[in-house]
Image (cartoon, rainbow, N blue to C red; front, side, top):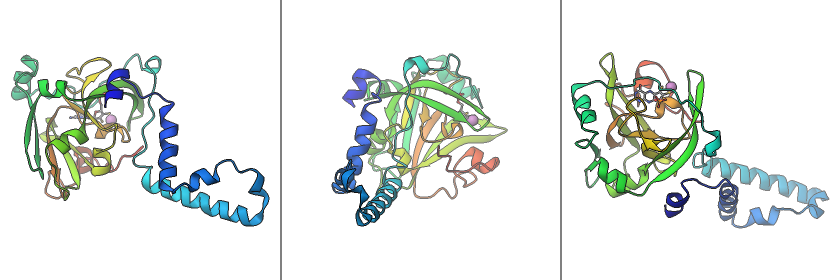
Length: 265
Ligand SMILES: Nc1nc2c(c(=O)[nH]1)N[C@H]1C(S)=C(S)[C@@H](COP(=O)(O)O)O[C@H]1N2
Ligand SMILES: [Mo]
């Protein structure tokens, strides 16, 4: 955490080496053995051994690193000059308007469901928590993308603080807005919930979130498409199943628009 706090960015150079060391740890050193042995490549026995090794490595990487791999991060110079607002741009309810009028001083995030210690966290508490900052690309299924900087508290920290049950399988985000009476909500699995780039963001591009972009708190789950990036998050719920939560599909778009629950990129 402290590394992220001081630089605000993950240095691009860190990523390949951490991936390589993860692979080597995984392969028990076989990765190291196979690296850079041009001389012995010629022998057919060695060749077949190598291709087996390659398959094993790729298979293991697919299993272990694909879902955990980091989404690409960008430099400040690559940030989009305009990051559009999309979907609902203001919940507009009496309750939300009152919270916004007071700069969300009375707002709290509820963390509940399958947790040992249900929490109510104020914005001030979130601001004081360890945070992570990342510049990533947002991809909306409607065909636009934008690169922006997000800063917030890792979701995994909050779930650990709440003492989430080992039997919980999904994290559901309940939002303040609805469309035609249908509440916006989204959900992710535990791999995404504990992914290092999954944060509950309070800031975008160095400033507090605007109402249009989801104030005071939104999810950033960087390996997923735009519609999973829930804005106006009011409540985080740990559950064993998505059955019985609204339409049971795990999200507003999944329930009503036929979008895939898993929107991995
Ligand atoms: N609560 C809520 N979250 C939401 C939406 C929404 O309508 N309500 N729209 C989604 C979609 S489709 C996209 S592309 C992004 C847009 O985020 P932005 O307005 O910050 O660009 O938010 C997502 N999260
Ligand atoms: Mo979207």
